[in-house]
Image (cartoon, rainbow, N blue to C red):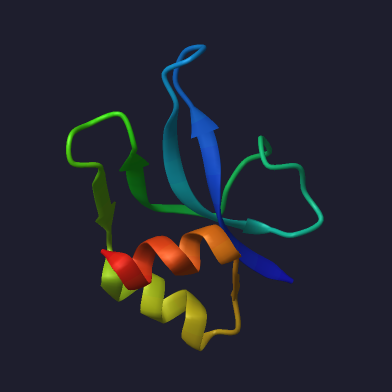
Length: 76
């Protein structure tokens, strides 16, 4: 099964997240199938950039979206 989830990047106490499409059986740090965006909560206001075309493509193919990603995309 394929999932769309966030991968934490950045230094300690300075989180930065990439929105990635990956195999659900793999660890979150394993190689991703595709990177479709990023989220930077440290900016004021927080920055979210998502390639909606690729997001919709993967959802149409049956990718499961994590709760946190679903909330961010709906809000942004």
